[in-house]
Length: 292
View 1: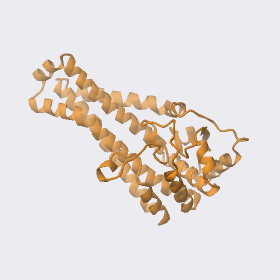
View 2 (view 1 turned 45 degrees about the horizontal axis):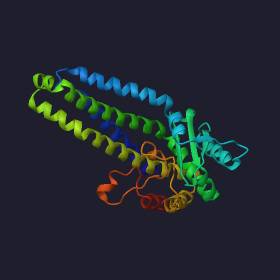
View 3 (view 1 turned 135 degrees about the vertical axis):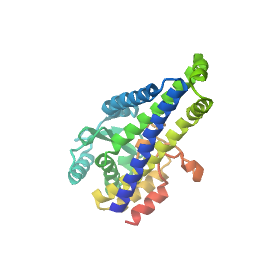
View 4 (view 1 turned 45 degrees about the vertical axis):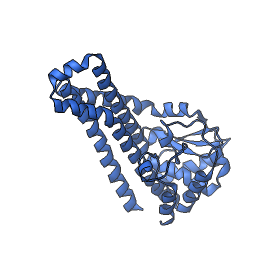
């Protein structure tokens, strides 16, 4: 278990470093293409930092609002509260706030900027369709996300994807409204071509990096959840049920799909299509859990 945790942490931070380099590279190349020098690099850094600051403090509120989640009262869901509090104690963390989403599809997610400001949201379908050991496995998975600061990393990665998209959009708008003349006078043909290629492919590359990070953190949370609950089969059985459940999650969308324990949107098989999936294959996650 500990070897898998270390391996996934290394891969996640390497991917995040590539993300940041991509943004800085975009800022530099676009700046050179418009004869701005390092101003473009500085602008990219400021844009990324400002977006990250805003998302850092308000991401949980935004996600809860989008998901139509409401606070779960202790008297209404005593087992849910008791289980979360027990897992938080085992993890050495303050208990997160608990929310419920009125939806028959079984699913759950964690959000927030750190363990002291974390939330866990579960659907009513999850509470109705899983037994207690399976529910504990899912909650342990979400608690592991909080313990590993995945909630902060996920927020940061989403912001970085948005920054790449904004920079690419800025380049295309500049080209459309008079930027061609400035770019020809201020940049070599090589830099101009590089800027065009980056504007086209950078958003795609950024999305692939975000999805790769998401898949690695899911593997890590599976292992962390198994460590917290001391019962990997509970989570493995829960994942099998969630994967087989036919009910769609009505409040899900592409912006929040990566947060859930299983993707509420349809994912595709095959090696190429797998690059665009937010989650690793359920079969592989179950296999890893049952091999522990």
